[in-house]
Image 1 (tube, rainbow, N blue to C red):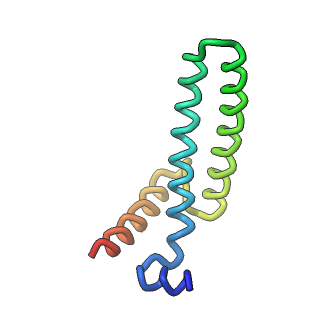
Image 2 (cartoon, helix red, strand yellow):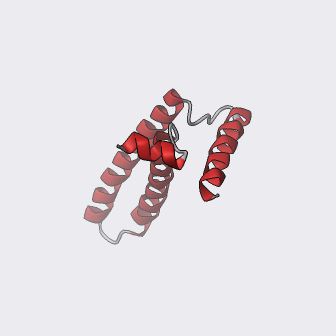
Image 3 (tube, rainbow, N blue to C red):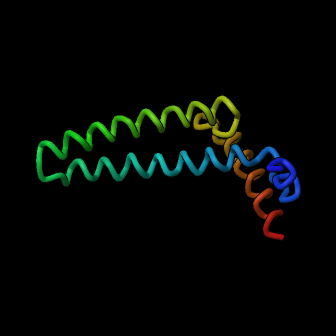
Length: 98
């Protein structure tokens, strides 16, 4: 049923990429926010907990990045290819808006 809905919405094959991209963006924000929180923590115990969470968030970011690179969704070292991927995703999103 899910594949049928994806096909009807014009998103067949794009769903994994959209979810992974959203997850990557969220993980980047988490790393940034935890980094800031560590510098603002008032106690050594809190800093320790936040550092542990930050390390976990960095590992998660790396796993998502590697997954996206492996699937061809993300090209951090090839800007031309990344622009091509982004344009394709943008066109698909615009189709959905119509």
